[in-house]
Length: 537
Image 1 (cartoon, one colour):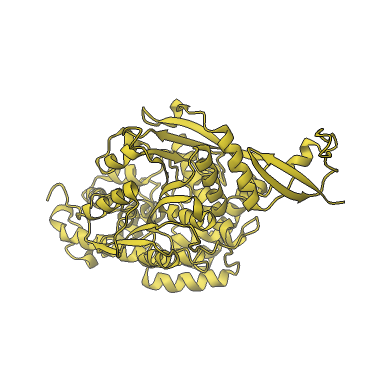
Image 2 (image 1 turned 90 degrees about the horizontal axis):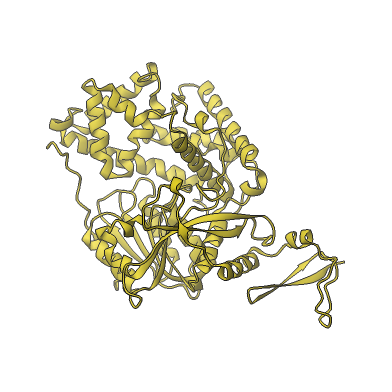
């Protein structure tokens, strides 16, 4: 017989219909001995109710701030703590995990303080615990904002110090050289398909279905709301970069009235039909464009790097390097896959342009060690390798669980073969990275329909036009979906993550928004930040 248990949690009264023994009468106020702890743990409620319960518990508990553990490697002046969240928000009294959070207190007066600014750097799989160093290091770009806000970082569920998940032994994960991601034959494709299926199975084996099935963006958004409550903030101030923009967009959709200020920088396209398979195809096109930008820059400085005085010559030399490393891996460990892992930094960040070009130039001049240091794995770095494997596990778990993916290999083969013909830099590597989602071992969800709802304040969107990882169309799509949002475009630039770069046109508007809530009356187009110049030029 179905009964109703009334759950009282930190002043929030939540009624959920569950199968349980009869409740105690209102007259007796005595606990019912037949309602066991196991029965409470098995209570099932809608996720929207579960997050209310978890947030109320967190608000009551707060955060016990203390010195950060030495092995976390965080800066002096940063405090650390834990926030408890349910693994499954449908079972708010069931299994829990603890999220690692850290904070640097605002530097201004009590009258200047406006609350906490919470940060997510993206991934999915990246740690946000380095964010408070922008306060402790007195970073000039954030000096005004630091007077008004505590800077708060966190490791999302499954990341780093927050119940980390794993899909593969870390030493196996970094072992090199790996197969060339560009297949020469159907046998090569079959071998990669086998590796992807084994990786997906490893995620289930090493992490377990209970946790793996709850590794979703909506759950991380719910975790974010619980952190907000634990901080005793009525509303959220949030800065999200890369995947952190999608996390922010989902949060804004689920909790519109809980948002105070939100900046999203380098935006994932939130359209349901792009999450995540088609977004990754879009990346392949954008990465090729930014790779071409870098090759043109290298050619411009041929007097420094001697890699070719036209972009076409630089590309020819790149293909020759790739082919040579395929035949004879550099130092026995750097093949095409490892080269791509290092050279991919250039399309991501123009701050890496000179470094990547210099390492390559030194290699061509006979300095093999420079390239080995940059591209080869360090098997002795067990902590770093564990972090790298964990980051990839999170990336895979969240993207594979968030949405449906094609299960028919013919779709993957058709799409990536066609793309590789025009955009060869990243296409096949990106395909193999995501292919575990085709044989994923837990149910895949339907993405949230990101929209603005009543109570959502103006959101500030910042995006460069030539971003490789999150193409510009993503910012346009989110802008269209969030009524009242304002878009700042960095025209002609392509670095991934704009708000931490020096560009006064952008920096002043970010400060103004965070400090006053004001945005421009219309969207703004800014010129690009300064293009890198080689030190030797």
